[in-house]
Image (cartoon, helix red, strand yellow):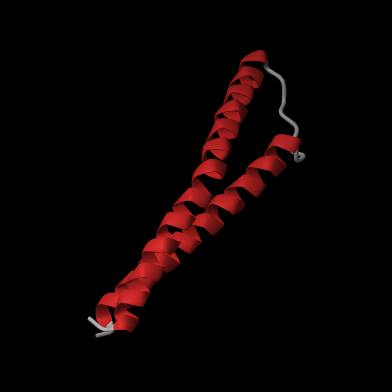
Length: 90
């Protein structure tokens, strides 16, 4: 294998590791907020109250966390592409 090929593979592995680490934390917090939001929705449905359609602090936080997780996944996908290029380039 050529030096360029090994470089792409090493870069790809590094990007996969970095993207995974970057996406893991926000995704966990997003899922916890989503679970809390579902509990609140069930409680309000049981209580019979209408849930306001406006944005709440939790919904804004969920959007920010979802975007951070998407960026991390995008970095990991770029790493997969770099590894594939590393195997194709010889």
